[in-house]
Image (cartoon, rainbow, N blue to C red; front, side):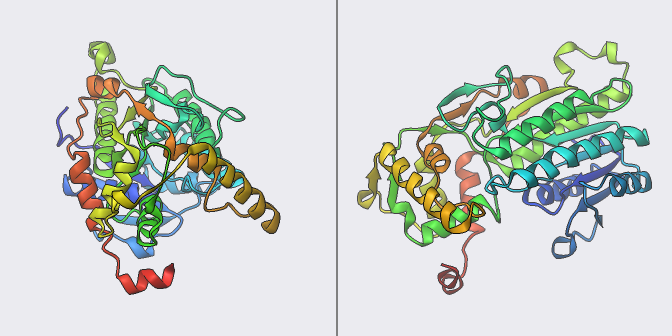
Length: 368
């Protein structure tokens, strides 16, 4: 695939989020769009002067349709979603499911959208409970009640909507499934990790630390999404029968990782060290997983009772299981079908990410 192939007029939904902002910057830097627009709930703090920003609530179908009719994009990247750390079923259903349904239906209605790239998650095939070893796209989607995370449940529902909307000769769709995105200035999971390291919480380890995990540097996710969009645009502008079967990607999902299985706790400590908070492994306390889960159960019930079910505790059974489970993926499909290769390795990605979090020590102490 020609890395400089133009995508035409492009819309990034959620373009002010961590992934969306990086996607916008890369598209502009590589001059891949004739015109680039960003749609988000709030846009003022994160403007890029080379694109246009628009406030729109994707859960309001009327707003979405009016907006798309006005800008008429040829390619849509949908990256908007509440953070996975928010355990709010209603919110996730509203944004991830209803919002995605609105975008897809309105995109088809205006008739000019060639490609729709949806940012899903690799966790749609994992129940957030047991180990997953080399999972791939042949694994079935996991829904509630087997699925333990509402975020992953709603992402799986959204995937079904997006892929079912694929229509050859009209709008082509694809889903990209990153596994645990990390990168510079991530304001959710990475920032929480760095703050935990600053507070000395990484001196406690759950389990024996031998569990492997797959992570994905944000720049590599952007590469995968652009590759997918370019391939879809190529399919719409070519005689589809002349395209080799191995290059047809519409209506399919692709898992993306850094293609490096790493030890979960080693990743956490490496990221903390890169941010200036090294952990002395000789002084780490190791808690058996079952003991940590028992503590989490007590904490969950206590917080539930005092908040009448409205708050999520800092320690949960799901979080404990994540920190002690093995979760790895096989990404042969995206490598073979899209030619994806991670440009930034884990070591370099961790260094870049950590360096972006050299937070003022006094300010951080006040937050803690």
